[in-house]
Length: 384
Image 1 (cartoon, rainbow, N blue to C red):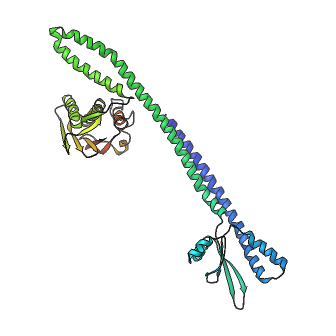
Image 2 (image 1 turned 180 degrees about the horizontal axis):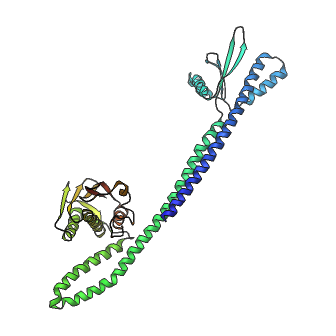
Image 3 (image 1 turned 30 degrees about the vertical axis):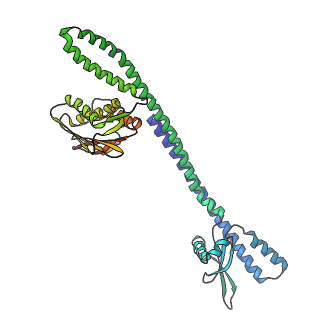
């Protein structure tokens, strides 16, 4: 699935590059062609003005009038030899010219950057020269900006396509997760019920009562695991719980199953009790996974610090260890299903934990900090 997604992304990216590259080259070709045609048109227009000033025949005047009136899209400004606007202009906003006395000067400066002026010598004695500056027509501007518009459209198309593919893949993954979890809970149900029956029979025998009590603890544990898996894929019931109490219960559970060489420390910052809306079985599962990962990272020796911070709108839980740490290249991978640096394990614990906190509790779970050889800190953020 991941490889297929990468292939889709590559194909779409190459297609976009080909389309945009071809469009840019063709638009540039069209823009240059239109610019040459507009230059010729302005040359003819200026010459018609010069001719109209020199002749008096009605036929010649009619022809020059037709030529000068034919330009309805290219903006033109007439200036003297010092580039001071004379007040003659074409295809410009008259309202802006009336409201802003410097509007024509600004336009002359703008047109200078676009095209060279066309100079017309009206007389030699005294020397009288007019300069004509012109800007790009609306058509030329549209052609030049067209590749940018098309690039935005192509980018939007790629984004929508990738979003649809990603959403579909996530939906499929969620269905697989939920299906596997519920099937696991279902499969555990039958042997647990059977074991409960055997335990009740053992309780009736005096010699086996101690064994029955220990077996009952293990069955309760299996029932808890089954309950956790059964809640995956369903909307869990959230209720107010004391986060400190929940965390300390899980610390006590993990502490009994770890060596004496591991020290556990829990601290609360802010007011107590620390109340938040959680699904207790699923939240306990997350804390258990993080504590077990910390133990594995320290190889049975070190210190685990749990810091609970109670702030007005959130509860922050930092779980730190003094283990081997996570390399920078792997920090972004630790929550991906199947990723693990251990010899044993499926690499699903952190992925499940992140899903529980973010999807079911609308919170956050991330690596706050990590340094090779010094340890890692995971942070849980719960919204009150």
